[in-house]
Length: 456
Image 1: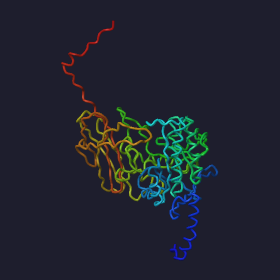
Image 2: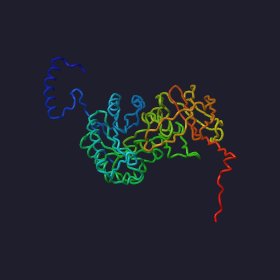
Image 3: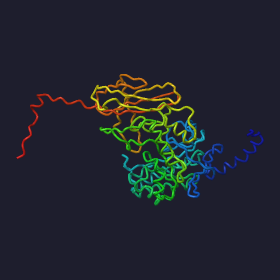
Image 4: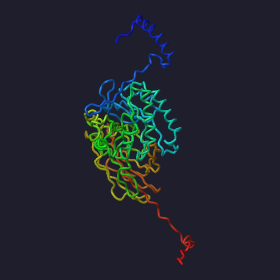
């Protein structure tokens, strides 16, 4: 485009200046004309039993991820949307997304009744205060061109989803959102589809356009199960990935077995092909988690390591989003196994055997880490403290395995293998347990122990 000439700029300014004054007087001009955003027009349409999103009249299938990882890497992998859970950093996310050609599912956090703050959807004053927060968020961000849709709440419906007051609060928020912003659809997000959750949305939330579903172990079967519920709304898989730590087998001391990165990658694939790809009721999905977080372990859900290195789940999503294999793939863990009993005494040793391969037969490096088991866990993915590394427990290590010595402190632990090549990483871990040392009772103590008397 050619630059404006001086005369044309002058004429244009003379036209826009009085127009700007008029708009300001009407209360319509919230910012200078040069910074006014033009929102995208997003619609949900149904045709011959198939639902579809349209952005500015063009079909848009969501190939997304949730989290705070690099949007440049998301774009490179073939993704086109990112999901958030709250509005604290939404302005920067929207601006970053706009620069990378990414659309944003903007989450507005709704209170959970089981939270410590004691929120109660039966109390109108609390619901009203939350609704005011929705109003403020929608008015602030509704005109950003990167905005795709609104996500009103996340897993606040409870176990059964049968509390009507929650669905009425969702409907009130959805109705207000559509009044303030007619350009973007509304969605509410539930944890799986059991109980009366979908029924509640169907019955009480006419202004909710889309049902968001978080599903992990059940991800591959969501499409089939949802279709049987006769819901009159399309769905988006808003979180999917490996089976959750609540869905897997456990050790005798209660520690969940975490799949390796390669095992997780297959879970992403099965969920996507089973419930997202070419499913008539599905508008797309958001893989979890585009970034890294401590949740039960340091690696359970993160698709990246803390330093930004991708793990092989990113390669799988790249293939599913783009239809092409990544140019440079992560290594694969074929086997990670403990040699011997994983219930140890303090200072007892344990050997771990590792078999890993590189797709291009390049050299691999392995970082071994021991961490204690997480004991302070929370619901709904709330933030957990990062656990310390106990590197003194590793007495020998190489690319084929390691030998550890059990810490003195009793309790659960994990030994992690971080397998790297030049492109990324794959991770696996083995849980082990250190028993409490037997208590020594002295003869002097035995002398003063009470003697049990016989029942009369």
